Every structure is written in C-alpha cells, then in structure tokens.
Amino acid sequence: QLKHLKNYVKLVYKNCVESVNPKILISQELQKKGNSLILKGNEYKLEKNCYIVGFGKAALDMALASEQIVGEHVREGVISVPEGIISQTKIYPPKIIKVFEGAKGNVPDEKAFMASKSIVNIIKALTEKDLLLVLVSGGGSALLPYPVPPVTLEEKLFVTKRLANAGADITELNAVRKRLSLVKGGGLTRMAYPAQTLALVLSDVVDDPLDVIASGPTVPDKVPKSLAIDILKKYDLIKAIPSHMVEVLIKEEDEDQQKYFRNAVTHVIGNNKTALKAGLEFTAKDGYVSKVMSCSLVGDVGQAAEGVAKMAGLVCQALGKTINCKVFSSELEKISQHLCMDKTAIDGLAKEIFQPTSKNKVCILIGGETTVKVKGKGIGGRNQEMALRFSIALDELAKSLHVIDLFNVVLLCGGTDGIDGPTDAAGAIAYNGQCQHATAQHLNPHAFVKDNNSYRYYSVLNGGEDLLINGMTGTNVMDINILTIQSKV
Image (tube, rainbow, N blue to C red; front, side, top):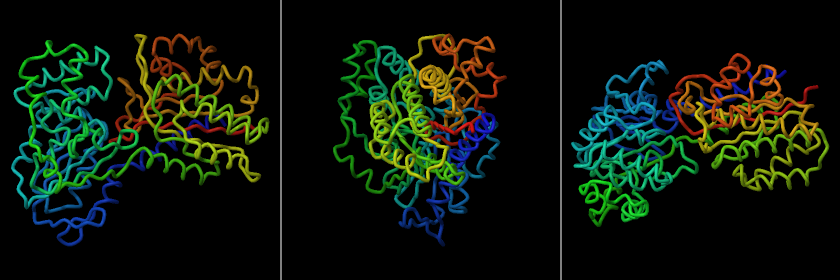
C-alpha cells in the first residue's frame, strides 16, 4: 500500500501542475472573434497591430498559445525564458516570437539583459494604434533586467548583493531594484504608452500582489519613491555605491503617473489556488475526504514541517476515533498560525472527517513558499528540506502517539516549476517510518537536516525513489504539499 500511495501522490502532483499549464490557462482567458481579441468580456481591435512580449518560467508556453490565438495579427514578439528550458521541456519555440534564454540559476545576466533590450526596442516603437500583449510569470524579475542608464547590470547586482549580505529582506531588496530598473515598477507600461497594454499574469506569489510578481512591470508601484534611498541609508551603503546610482534613486518623476496606465489592464490567469483546486477534485473523485487548508504557507520550513506532522497526527487520532471533533478543531487551531490556516478551513475539515458517512482516507493540500535558514554546507531545496523535517517530526511524534502506526501517512512536497533549489529535483516524498528505513540503510536523518543536505539524503535513501524528479515544467505557481492519510487495514 505504501508504494501505491507514493505513486498516487505523484499522480496528484502531476494533475496539479497540468492544471496550471500556461497553454490551457491562456486559451481559457483569451479568444479571437473575427478581428477582435476578447479578454474578460472586453474586445480589442486587431489590425495586424499586435506585439507580444513575455518573461518568466511560463513564458514559452504562454507565448505559443498567444501567438496561435492572435494568428496573422502578430507583428513581432520577444520572450525571455530560463536557460535550458527548451531542451528540458522539449517545447518547440513560437514561429514569430523570438526566444532568448538566460538568467542561469535565476540570477540576472548579460543574456537576460540582451532579451530585455530586445523587448524594450519593440515597446519603444509602439503607437496608439498598437496592442501590446505582456506575458508575466514567476522568475520574470531575473529575466527582465534593464538598469536605468547610466547604471550598469554589474552595479545593480553589486548593490543587491551588498543589501542581501547586510540583512535586507525581500521587500527592501525589491524596493531598491524597482527604482534602479527602467522596466519594473510599472516601467514597461509607461514605456508602451499610448499603446493599449494587456498583461496576463501567472502568479508565483502568495495572495497575487500585482506590484510584486516579477517586480510589477505593468502596474503602478505602490512603494514610496523615497524608500529606496532610505533603505541604503539604513544599511549604511550610500557611500558604497556610485554617485550616478544615487542620482537615479533620488530623481523626481512626472507628476501624472496615472495617465500611463489608463490604456493598461492586468489580469491573473492562474495561481497556487488553481493547482490545489485541481488536486482537490482529483482526490475527491477517488473517494478521499479532501480539503485545501491554505494557499499562503510562508515562514520557517522547520515550523511548517512540524505543523504538518502535528496535523497528520490529529487526523490519525480522528480516523482512529481516539479524539472528538471539538478537541480536533481546538488542537488544529493551536498550529494554524504556523500553517497559515484560517478557522473556516479548520471547521470544514473537522466537519467532513467526523461526519458519520466519512471515509477512512484523507487528503490535505497546502500551498505556498517556505523559507530555509541555511546553516550547513549540504545541497537541497525548501521542498526536500520540508519532507525530511516532516518525516523526522512525524516519527518522533509516533513514539508517544501509537495510533499513527495504524495508518500510512505520505507527504509530497514539490515545486510546481519542477525545480527545488540548486538541484535537478522538484521536491521529495516523506512517510511515517522513513527515518527507520534510513537508519537501516546507515543514514542519519538528523545529521543530513543539520547540514541542509536533503538532496543527498533523498538521492541515497531507497535508491532515490523518494526524490521527485520531473525537470522544468514550464509553469510556476509556488510549491504544493499533498498529505494523504489512509488506514493500513
């Protein structure tokens, strides 16, 4: 049964990823009727006046679908995609739209800069008669580097690295990056004005904030313009950067910024919720009590893993009829903060598990993006680390909570982009008893987790069968965690 369940969660994961296939999402949102392009019920005139640009992990399939729909009305296009994606996904490039690969390891580089220059060249030539289709997805920020002249890419990377090393968080880093970019923070739409701009976004950020996804190239920047310089002062870096960079950061802008966005619309076409909903429907059809508990899991991976282990223990107790509904809900609420769950989700799960006709198998889906504090010298990613920490926490819990032994508890942790850290894996699969299997194979789970060495651990354990390896998927809506609990009898 355990082997079957491990294969089953892989199927659920595959189904979740396929639901956010960019081609499918684009074709659902974008239609052509005669000489009009229709998006969300609005019509846009097509007169061989359409230009397509894109950047991100999903840009390749998004461009293919868009080019096919718009057809002969596409004049020109450029997309910036991750290095190696064409060979890994075996997706044929579009016919008209040019494809640039770059940003190896999700770091802006000269190849990505060349792609950005090509995108800017197209946009700068647009007129009020033109229609610009912008395809945005996760990883787009690294794939669209274009520093405000005279700032160079090397200088921008230098200040970003200094800020990161000084302890600046992602919000602070993005505030500085946007001010140093010609295209981010709404810069791309400002540049395209007065052309009509339609942006389709595949979100890889919790709660889908449009000004954060790919650093918000098509929407107004909500961050105060003075913030970037204040951040550099906070970390005592003003003297460490060139004077021309300071001048760019303090430069005043045109007062009427809103005029540039009057001809622009931006729509989210898919996100983590889309993927988890597909997983929910897939497992429910197979007779599981299925529930999406959160699409916004953030924070420390260790706390998240312990929280999921405790939740698994509670579900085992509920299915084993050793606790009642009230205690189940109360105990879940105690860990809700670590798992970013609300009371509605908790009450819904309790109601379904404790109803008289409930099945003896449960599937819980959680999405988001945790954080790993790297202290060791090993290799891994947040999904593999989550799986390893979960298996340790669950097996520790089972020492005092023997009801867990009556069930097969399996957790798949995977990135929807097929990439987890600097590895070829998307994530890993954990289960109760995995630590005992590791010990029998002369592996020490605690030593591997201490060294942040989850990839090497799962590469060796069980001959590597618990590693989730798919290659790049050509999409990205953060991570998904699929927890299944089923009676062994």
